[in-house]
Image (cartoon, rainbow, N blue to C red; front, top):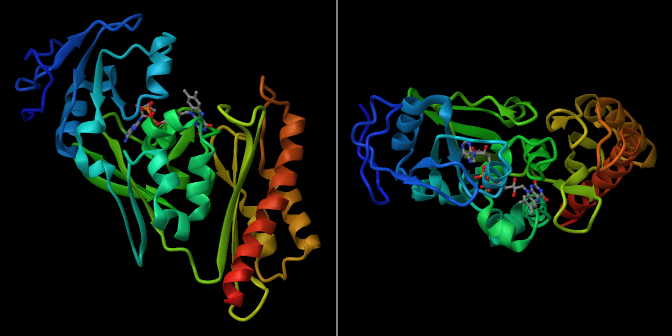
Length: 325
Ligand SMILES: Cc1cc2nc3c(=O)[nH]c(=O)nc-3n(C[C@H](O)[C@H](O)[C@H](O)COP(=O)(O)OP(=O)(O)OC[C@H]3O[C@@H](n4cnc5c(N)ncnc54)[C@H](O)[C@@H]3O)c2cc1C
């Protein structure tokens, strides 16, 4: 049995879900959309219980900027929509000395404009700022960007180099896993049917580090990345030697990926042009791009090389400036 949900209008028992007796829901006929039952839980527990009850015919909605487009196009035809916007806890953004705790329903606009994010995690603020338009960013959430699991999701490469972890809740409890393990395939995540992403935990930036995200797209705005590359560099104390480097690639494989062989090449080296060029060439080997309307595989490989070099150089510059302070 699941609890009583906050509701919008007409109480009705969902035919398909024997257990959702107390659920209060509304059946909508919306324009060209197929009709669906709408749930607006106010807690994570309610949301996961509804999902456990309704199974795969239910779909979670956050900002709806991806989901509703797909539903309007007829690509998705859920019987039930579970709207997460009524769960206040998912909209919270907290920062302390350990790092950032980002609720899954924090909007991209909030990521772009939050002072602490801009100051301490400029790479995340920058990545959020390149998504779509202000209107899209006002609605679109960081959780939606990640759970949509598009290979080109702009928030994915920066979160990957920051070693973010995904916080997940399901009817049976909570778990956390490295974001790198969250992406399973294009449009596919490690979430079970009754699970939602509740947040992303980002550890504090290491001392003497810098991070950068660069992307190319076919237009300057309102277009997805043809290639996106994030890099993070940590320097040894009092030295220009690289203690650790992380590189993540978007839009060039079935999921956003880390280029770990390329990263290894940089450890313990002074990051001059030669070392950076060597790592950029190794990053190209990690890429498995396809050709599509936005660009050929060959173009994407070239851009991985160019953007990896530039992202590493930008991250190194930031790290060196911090070291100098
Ligand atoms: C015009 C336009 C331009 C765009 N430009 C870009 C761009 O430049 N870069 C980019 O990366 N994206 C872009 N997008 C895609 C989209 O806006 C973003 O990915 C956005 O962050 C999605 O967030 P949302 O909250 O709207 O997700 P929704 O549409 O609500 O959901 C997306 C998917 O994630 C699932 N989901 C959402 N939240 C959760 C959760 N907490 N737990 C489990 N599942 C969840 C939903 O079920 C759905 O499958 C664009 C979209 C449009 C329409």
